[in-house]
Image 1: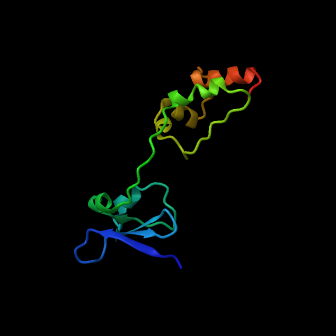
Image 2: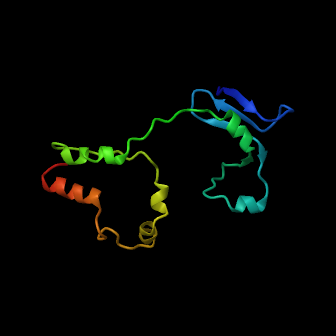
Image 3: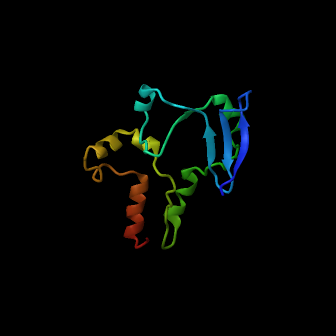
Length: 138
């Protein structure tokens, strides 16, 4: 049985909107009024048949959403030398599903339209990969 833990509500009457934590997971269950406005629903993207949408006051999220402190990211400029100075094998683990900044670039649009972008001018990262692989490194 999946247990829900009450997090908080901004309702004075004890009904919705409310946030719950799904115990044993990192998921938050949101209770709110169902969105039924056809114009709003038409603007939503990538909607699965199993999904529904609820309205949640910003105040509820501000007051009760779980707060975690993300560790500061190490700037790539501090990591980049590791990819020049390694002895034989290096890898770069990509953990994001996508990069929004890339999707906003003209190069992304050209690629989506079928343009051949692999022959475009290189950058420092790709040039270093070429140099290191020419030295027999992986």
